[in-house]
Length: 409
Image (cartoon, rainbow, N blue to C red; front, side):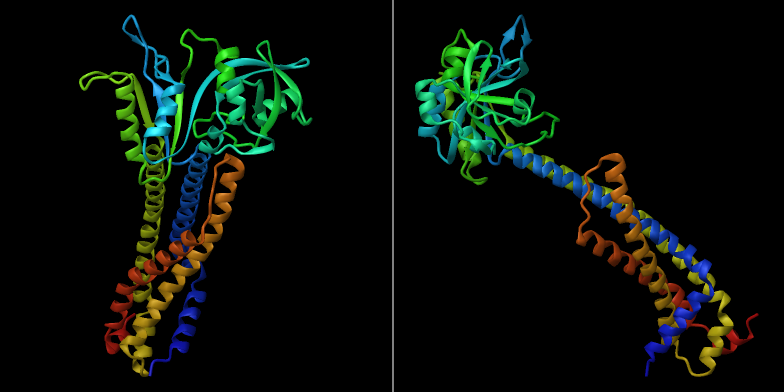
């Protein structure tokens, strides 16, 4: 009967006798596991940061923008040709399928003043639905109402950055600011959203009713036009249907023939978000795979050292066989030694990897996310390396002839 306890004890004693060699043998595994932990922590952290930024932008979004204007053969960029109107937005809401919310939007950079304080920021004219579409939340006060746009009231909703620059720690609700030379009453303050994926401050803005913006603030040669129409689909299954309906409707409203170029463009942010998520996931797996090469190298190191160990301990193996040890006992002993070397290295590598990941966060400012699956994956791979690369030396040891082994010098 196999005495597993005795075999484990002998394997432990053997590793203790050769402490330095055991440490050096485990070094490859330690480096490999710590590298895997750090790379997966960085990759997962980056993925979560991007996912959070994508969530802050809103989900199932379609951005309908005016086309690019041309001047002397030079394309001026999207949104420069005023082709979209408030009536287009109303038509889309009424006639297109799969739409949950829609909001026209126009913006300009303006100087905002309060007392002796001033700040240059983006002023966006829109409706109350825009906050839901883009996941803006009201911290205090209220948002924009249908009555604000119907009556063209002079009310403003401030982002956190603008509020801090103009009011400091003072509550801005009820205060009167000036957008250019026009007075506006602050009726709402937004919760902070931080920076976008492009590094843009999402709190450095002011929202006012779209009708007020068009009539009193922006000034335009094309009354009723908007820079963009933000559309939120009901779910990701109908977003393509909504995009198709919007395209056909606007082509009909703008009298665009089959062979004519559209005077608008539709950006599907859901597709962009999925592409970015897939890319970051691939990068995370690639980083983990590169780090995993270190584990393979560590496994080869274990196999080499165990083969040397078999040669050095040939007489010991012969004595054990002479007193009754079976080939399976010898094989299991060497497998246990290889497994223990790998797991000890793995546990030390996990500890070093966690510390290393936190140091990267503190010193380099990287976003990290250490997860239990990444730790278990590293330890599991480490154990598999120990058994896989330890099997051949163990098998070789079990094949030794007891008589020849006892004669070995």
